Image (cartoon, rainbow over all chains, first blue to last red; front, top):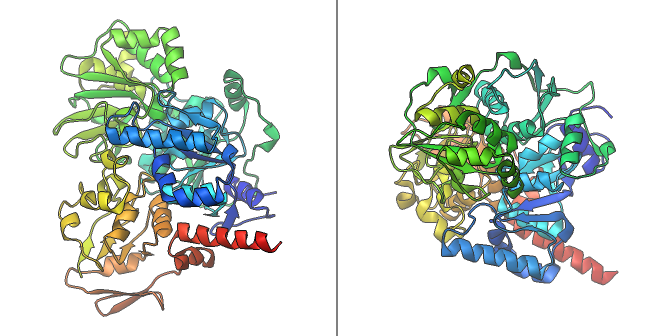
Length: 423
Length: 167
């Protein structure tokens, strides 16, 4: 079969020989992810659930992560409703508060696997493209309908091919790479599209790929995806997962792309995305000395083991600048346990870091690090929208973990390559 | 009827602040915060039948459906934009909120212009000028006709259940 990844996998899921961009297909997702918003989702269909039941309880994975532990009575009641639903409908794949961010858990526990079709009521569901799944975000109403019927419609997207070459230089991360791509394509540059990463992807490990795929929605993509290779195998082995590699899907020539973008990774440097748009990307060297009150290392974009270890390598024996605070938000309990055992988390806490429970934390502005008017946060998260961290009068600047760590030492934006010279 | 005009890349945090996403789910809870960080006047002054005109990539960002649910509940007749972000597009359709992608109409609009939408012939009138917009695919129109995705799913389930009894 020929075609792009999206065309091939959607044809297979829709039971058709071939599909074309723009075509509407009916599909049955292999997995449905919901999180704290499960309470609102089941609230829409309480009577329907009693009448028809859950379409397939094995396909529903629920992870409480957005406001954990509950920051208000309302949030606590939502969690309570979710736990009651889990018990009543015998939902097996449930992870309660404190296990981690949904996207990290879905990957660590092997709920998303190569060749799967995953839909989730969270925009960063696109993260699982890292493991060769077709993964896209949906709204709550759609998740509710899926719980009842198990099927939905998808428009076959056009595809964008990103051809990577070379290697990322030292102190330059996958975050700098994907921010540079978003800066080039624009916040809506991949709207409705499937974004495929080709070329020299071997040097990008599963953590890198998750960071890159996670940011797909920030360029408007429906999904973003990598092939299945040795890096996929390493991820499976590390997490004690097994997989049928024959289920992996990849583009086969002659596939037609809406656009191809060649990116030489050797030329990528540390960048930041300035307020209030993710595509407002400039080299770190264009924003030096910008004072920062809050630093955040973590989230579903950059809250993994290497992110904390590289940050710790910079902050070990140093201290967060006076007048600034550094928040540490591990993406999962496993990440926290690993970085505790390796000493990385200890070094970050010794340097003045504030450890938050695994979850979404301050990223969406609900709790655990809300900003004040006039304050600025340098963050490894994925969005710098006005008001995102709870205050419309504050500014958020996005960067990779090493840029955040080195800047935290100085209380202002600094180029992490300076740290390398000093190490 | 008021025409509310906004620019490019109007994101979901502008349409509905993330800090309320997990405490506001119903129309009643959503309405006071609608477009709060973009246009504080909107929630106070929006009236049934109003139209929103916007630039490119309207609704980008989060999968939260409060913007779509809120705009529908406020009685907004349609959002006309140069382009829409995918998640907002899908969420709006699922709520039964009319979205019209018509860059020519948005660019032609001047503040003194009236805006009229004729769904029958797929045309939008900016002052005296008419612009055609592409109709929704048939598969999607079925959801639209049912009044949104949940009513559509219920119709389907009820029909299947009826079918089972006949077997």
